[in-house]
Amino acid sequence: MSERRVSVYPPSGTGGRRVRIDDQMLGTAYSLHDLTVFLQNAGLTGWDELDVAESGCIEWHEGGPEVWKG
Image 1 (cartoon, one colour):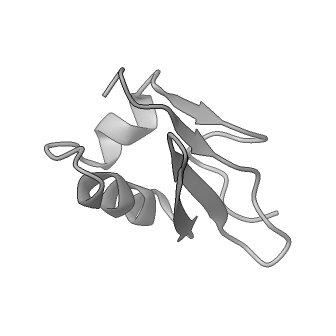
Image 2 (cartoon, helix red, strand yellow):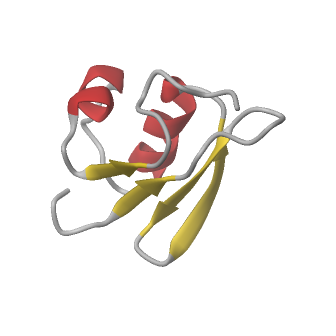
């Protein structure tokens, strides 16, 4: 995972956060579960929600894994 750059952007006013891995925009996650599914589908298998929430490899903008609404 450390070779890939994961960015979770600030929550939007309508809810959800855009998610990017490297130069690829994956979509908008509305929960930690959504983010975990995005990452698994991008090839980061074996990660569960706790792994994602505690990972130091994810760059969180304007709030951590507990913040999903703006």
